[in-house]
Length: 493
Ligand SMILES: [Zn+2]
Image 1 (tube, protein in one colour):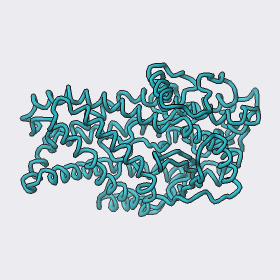
Image 2 (cartoon, helix red, strand yellow; image 1 turned 60 degrees about the vertical axis):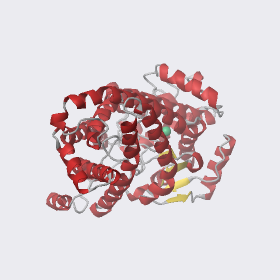
Image 3 (cartoon, helix red, strand yellow; image 1 turned 45 degrees about the vertical axis):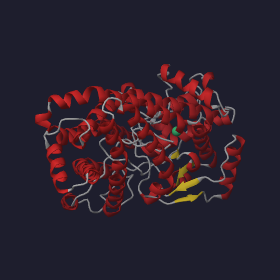
């Protein structure tokens, strides 16, 4: 699946000036790069399979991985907090109210004025978030991951900004129309509108948005393709193609994901993965992705997202409207239905999503773990299959500089996937096989809903946790991220 930590895109001439000052216009000299071909150990009983030696890291590389991971964890908190600070600057200073009035005074048609206001908000938020984006770019270069020069990266940022300027009004205008029409009950209709639009974006994204940033081609390696398709057909997946993406255009990180919906659902492999992994390891990664597909994880993620939106919108409708009426003088508008209330509403929803992040992460880890179970089961799991799985994860950790054993609290809060250490230990057989999740078969819609409800109410096992970043598919207050996943706090796939 395609998921990313909220990340902001933005623009500005100032950026070019700033970059020149920082000497960043050309990629800086690389620091310690991840090993190209780590000497992984596979399944060896009686040794720590997640030690630097097992991952093929030198002491220096292990050190670098630790620093890189710590930075990613910090960014996992700093990013949403800075997003909320940006929204607060727009929402609480009277700026949003003043800007909405200025635009309305010049544009007679309300719809046009509202659309212009939302686009202006997107531009403001992108500008405020730009320093952090720039820092991320610099950091990815420093650790040897980023492959783009500044111009290439900035071009992608601009494309992302344009996409955001189109998609954000598309989402917000109908919802705000519903707020005005049904001031008490809009949250139900608003949720339905939001979900319908989210489905629409998920359907068109692989076909119309993702190709703006990368080239997607059918897998070129014929023998690998035949092997993967045979595996898919054995699982009842009606695939006739697997896609590879030139992710190396932006980064050296490895990944694979399931994306799209209805007719556009597809499995995509990074070219970085294809060049560095053995066919057995790629087959294991594909087994994991097929697990997402067969176990309907895209739909489950969507259902989970729908539940979060309904609750968020309900809270918004009950709490924020009263607050706005009480502070109308200071804010410069007097109802939630005013378009000027958009930044305040997004601030409220961002805070809500920040608080429930551990729930979202747990749900996501749960799905990821199911996909790992599925992949491991495809071949047994025999000791050989376990060895291949372990080697795949070791390679992923080594090449992505992922600290295999993050602090439990960090994993609990931030990780959309189980930590790679937990995944390795599970695949090595150190945790029991969770029999309830051994499902290689397609489910009917009823059993799916029942199981989803059970999942939502059940506690997810803490250690070999699992799943998928479902969550802020459109990080509120920031910009949808159509580019490939950038969540490096956890090894993906
Ligand atoms: Zn996955």
